[in-house]
Length: 318
Image 1: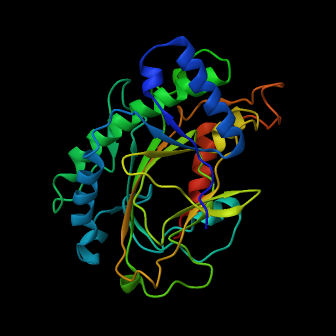
Image 2: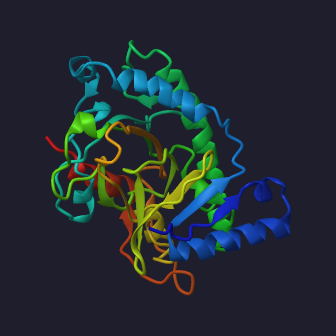
């Protein structure tokens, strides 16, 4: 199956502060997001070894006995450990599937944190993986800065001031999941229609993904080709826009639909770990679509926090 055309953008063009180079990059981003909703991102400046260190710490946690991990499940906000088959992501788009075959460590920004500071929920982190908390803090701070840079480029692509989006992200709602996809020999055969993550679009502004490739990996959807295996390059982030950005752009940019395939019987020992950073704005931000000619659809205005909360309620199993 051929990979879809998802261009790679090099952020060194932006960091060089060359007006012509910045304009060219912004135009490329605009054209790509109108067709796919996905980008590959290089030149981001993040230590290429950092994702691997986060994965190693997370693996120490995920391989603990279930009874130990259960002690870190923090309700009612679904932070900390989320056990297997506790989430049905496809419900967010109204698609019925069996629950997802993944476990996750989930954390988010504390919205009471002051600008320029980072506080994570959950407030209890696993003693058995002591490096997980500092590594997640380091990683999310770097990726949050990257997300704001990308939002500045996207604002420029829409011929708006560079801070058009980031003026709303000084105290943002953001989430970070470490998604662990156990091997087929651990999960058994997937049920009909069951995925590691069911088909969906993300809920916020943009998502930045550091992933591993495999037979049970990421697929993206477009109207012309249907489901296609996502391209993969080591050290390159995958970016997709979410529902709130589609709304804000007036439908000019499409929220990227995607899924993660079930464990493959051809690779029974394959386990994968994805680092998924979800970036959004302050929960009280009212998202009002850009008018024509930039915007193509006039969605109703929506409050960012309400939208995300409603979607999260839809996907979480009791």
